[in-house]
Length: 91
Length: 514
Image (spheres, each protein chain N blue to C red):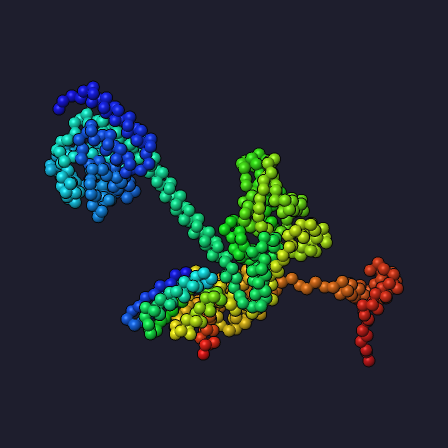
């Protein structure tokens, strides 16, 4: 898995590629925390369009990120279903 | 020019011997150049000594080592095209190149001339480093003095070039081998990581209670060293579970060795497991390490263990009990410490009862059984699996399939899946290929055909008997006794047939007529 933070103006994007599972989940969490620290108050988009698999740990992290204000871009029926469930459960 | 004296010849001869010794101890080019500098500098007036590699494929000269420069410029280029360089001239002429006066030279590129001027190089002698395989480099002796080298000097430097050529070619080959070995090691690490990542525990997809029960069992049993028997229908993921067990065990860093007992001819399975010595049997042209030995310190996965030939079963049992065996044709006892994970889609207990599987081996293998549910027993996981496979194949095939229509999902959830997850995966792959839009379309005909190909329910003995008696009665026009009666056709007494008819509830229906 690879996570990359980029910013254009006041738009911050965390782009995630690969498998969001097991030992890779803390890496994304670290990246997320850094993005929030470096860009306080910014709306952060988490780009999951190149994520191939999300396990329960990954899903839990995405739920926390959503509660902390993240928005998501997802691709593929599995990732979209997971994000849709997260958003529905938080609504 | 004064003629070379005997003393000069002796010095040069000794220098050649010293160079030979330096080449024998050759470790790297920098050390070689230093050694050459120390040996030759008292004999030949040069200010710079350079060894370069010739890359024929890219037509480049690559600087490898240089002596005589106190403070080499770190930004100095280290690769040059051969065109417009001394090497280009050597390649054209096939001869070493002597340039007695660089200021008169007009064959070289301007930027090269700039380098020569920068270092005040006034003359130089370039010698090809060649073996029977061709030219692979150049050694250059350059000087701030014009016309620095006599004919004898140049002949001596060619001798040196011939000696160095062999050593540098070997060093080049050694470097390439090292590079290849590093690359292969990296590739091995990468592939092992890929294999591990492909079969990671977290990629067993699903969250329903049936699967969660299995995952809990895996987490309980995996860290122990106990033999595990994975049972389940074909296509339920037995190998996936076996690899997850290995990954979660204390043997995760050792090898996972797999053998499908049904895939190997019965006559060869012993050799596959035990290995064989050269000449052990016809076709044993060399030593072969068997799976028991390969799995030492790791996990041995025997898939379809129910297909293991009866004659091989006691041998497997011995290895499991003692950890010892001999290769076919060998006498040396070999020890192997491995953890056994076995899998089967057959009822081993029933096979034991039918004496098709040894009871002692069964109990040795069945220490911790794990039963994988059929896909139809975990329908709650089908939507997640469908989305997972659609996403996997869409990405792989660069398709943009965003959703699965509700009616399609409904069909997939309620299908019987005799082939379980493997069948689901295949159908999804085929569906992704055939889908033209963003919504998944499945080839429903495949599912219908699969249903029609599923085996018909087996009739009970009672039903079969009832049908048989009815056929005989129809044929005899419901005449029970007599030579043409149904009892005679069925080879039984009339009373016996009547008794059977009563027991099976067979009665003739009379149709009333007016």
